[in-house]
Length: 306
Image (cartoon, rainbow, N blue to C red; front, side, top):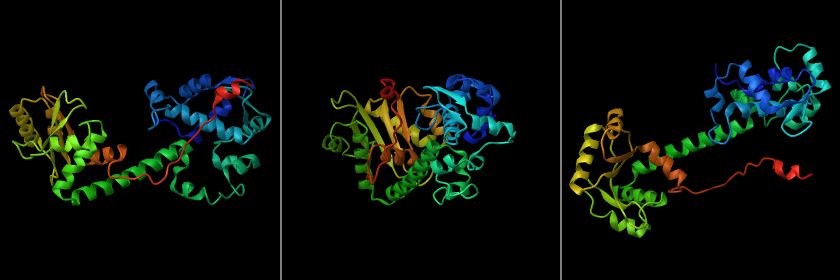
């Protein structure tokens, strides 16, 4: 079954502590994995940030929400225990404990920004309306960032497609230099001159010392780039006595083209329009930083000294 959302975890998590004892969070993760039939592969599935498993993250947020409502407490680091309020909640045999249920607790309403047990605060209503309330706050940040990134990538690619050919060539140079190839932009610019030689649009150093060269073909193809075009580029590398190349297009590569480069002895990297835009964003080419948000968490080692 899919990994449960954090609100679906709340009631089983609270029930797991019903014996009144302290429970290590790690043990609860294992017990809830069995309860929800979460596989080992699903347990290891990471958030887009790659820093924490999705399942453990959602259990963490379920624990936080229950603590803010006063149903759980943390007697020590990495452990939780049910409170009297938590036992009272379970005594009423609820079918589900979620954000709507927790609104009955004043402490939770104050923390979450709800104005009343039955009405969400204006800052929360848009999230509830879109059904994104199943995601943890951390996941909401990831979703928002991904949506903004994808929108920016589409706009970037549109601008690149409308740019003159010589601008596109300079863009490719700037991007490869930003990625660590070619030494300086001046060196790379000279190296990429003389385009159109047997299907080679440019040459760039693989490293700052110029120990090897990478041959480039960068074109704004209108349709999907198929295997024949990639095969011709591979043949051009033979003419240069090279075994490394990069093909960059503003469109896409066919599955046959991508499969072809995995079977030949040469190293040819294919970068389509989406990947081009993603690299431009990741390496700061053609984009400016308008604002940044720093997400912090508690430094547990600081409090261990107490």
